[in-house]
Amino acid sequence: MAKWGKGDPRWIVEERADATNVNNWHWTERDATNWSSDKLKELLLAVRVENEDGSCEVTEVSKVEGEASINNRKGKLIFFYEWNLKMTWTGTAKSGIKYKGNVEIANLSDENDMDDLDIAVSLGKDEPETDLTALMKKEGVKKIRETMGMYMDALRTEFTQGMILPTINDLSKDAGAQAAPKVDKAQPASGNAASKTSAGVKIPTCKFSLKDHFPAPPEEIYRVFVTQELVQGFTHSAAVVDAEKGGKFKLLEGNVTGEFLELVPDQKIGMKWRFKTWPTEHYANITIHFVDQSGETELKVDCKGVPVNEEDRTKDGWKRYYFEGIKQTFGYGARLY
Image (tube, rainbow, N blue to C red; front, side, top):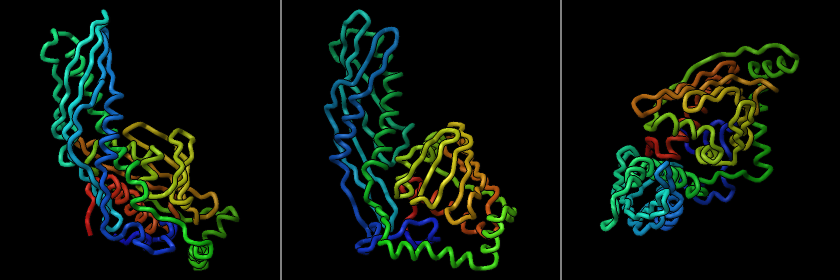
């Protein structure tokens, strides 16, 4: 695993000019407790479900006890959080009669899977029996579980902004970095390929497949690839992601661009994909398959049309800046070095 900024210059964003703890390369820690407390209250107070019997909503968050923090070591983010939560729900029957009850979550933690989250719903001590309790126990619990997932997504994206902050150097260094691929192209293989393309001659290409595993369901990993804020999270730079058929994307300061050709939610993404330094208008066809394996995801990436002389660099870039980038940023099996 190369250090941040020590890989192929076409994949990376230039490092900071001041060289002060570049990209938080040294161990740093940020306390997310106060931010998390406010975010949890905000999200929980928006919980509301309804059916033919009436509606239920969270009307008060009376206990937010715990802590959260994010550690960053050598550009890898590691999340720690543990919370005990208690809230009040209010049900309103179609007749207008109101009921109150409680919800408790005792084990919201980075050590527990979302499916293992214990959400206990009860009706108030002196309240008469109501069918709204069943609504809250079924649909309400489902909504609260989704809300806790939203908290974790926000913790990994909103709060982490700036913890790893690659920036562009001064123009002279940037120009020098862009000059490097030109020297590369002067070599016989890549130089001839570029000139042939401009003359309309087909360049030699190859195809290959890559695989990796992520300890999260396909819908969660799929969302990482199609949500602009999450893409910006794992690439640590501005991105444009228009996730619809024919929509464009631009990553890593424009070094990677392309277009979405097919989007099958939680299953498959097809796209045209290219490096900025590839011959003009030459794109590879990339298909990402999200395979469910008992709640985990096997990610298979099929690449076709990659210039032969770019095969190794393309493989390395996908492994480093997609697979490892996603794992490190969102805590899916991040490794310490």
